[in-house]
Length: 403
Ligand SMILES: Nc1ncnc2c1ncn2[C@@H]1O[C@H](COP(=O)(O)OP(=O)(O)OP(=O)(O)O)[C@@H](O)[C@H]1O
Image 1: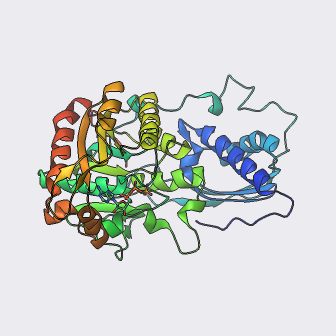
Image 2: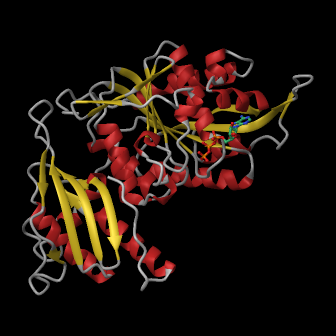
Image 3: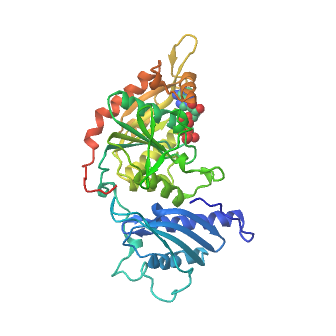
């Protein structure tokens, strides 16, 4: 699934980045049925003017048409040839395994260039590009998951993962069945923070079986990475494809909450996930510094655009607890999280101390809530605030869903 992208001598790094980004945008905008093809990309490799895609497509799709339409859309961006390796998904769970289908030939992206393209001009039949992205309201709820919560931050390093893991454990402590999906492609840390870095998820009937982490069902994007393919090198479609695979092709048990640790930022990957996964609500983690607050605002705006309710803001590292006298004070000043919560009319779920104990516990794989240390009550209070609000945002359960 993962391939190293060969470098080409004729492209400058800037041209390379521009062409990669143009390819990403085309893939993100091209829909098969109502779903972006980006979520179906299992592998992607570009070598100059040649693009190779490994795709997992719905059984009723037409790979030949897709190959031709993508060829026409990508040709203006310098892609002359598209190779496609296709696997067609089985129609329903248990109805058989996937059918590998190697595309018989390489398509010249210029082929049929003079004919009208289905995507652009034949609007009477199947205009896949012009269909609107699915909205949250149109997404079916997962049949075994009551609430999906995404934990996001506009900026990296604000303590999003530390907060996620402790909130998940706190929700469990309040009596809920909890799962954790580590979608942070830039730094998957859930396995380490939960002390299960050495445990690999099993595959059963082409479905991942989540790892048991202190009673929670955990799966991490880190499990899909190998040594010579760093997550940072992943580009949009590849990352979203892998993340959708983790969500869809996992045998999640019956859960009250699936807590997703999102990649930091508000780019294409975050937006696509927000449009494809039926989320009950988002929790935004920020720190009191101005830049982190500005980034949190971007996060809130992104969720507003995609109609995902923002459950609230958590202000991390807002307070300092002296390790000698245990006195707690707001060293960065107060009011940052409150300000943003007021401005956007979202609740401030809680303020967390900056404390070496919090870091030491996650480094050991035994987060504060698990060992019930002096910081656990802060996370429990946040979890209670989430629970107090969440039912009004719950999605109706659709038992007909096949995943
Ligand atoms: N409240 C806190 N007090 C002290 N240290 C903290 C606190 N929250 C997080 N940290 C530490 O800050 C560092 C960054 O935290 P974490 O990895 O959770 O951030 P992140 O926002 O998920 O980062 P990234 O976006 O890069 O994945 C870690 O070393 C973590 O232990």
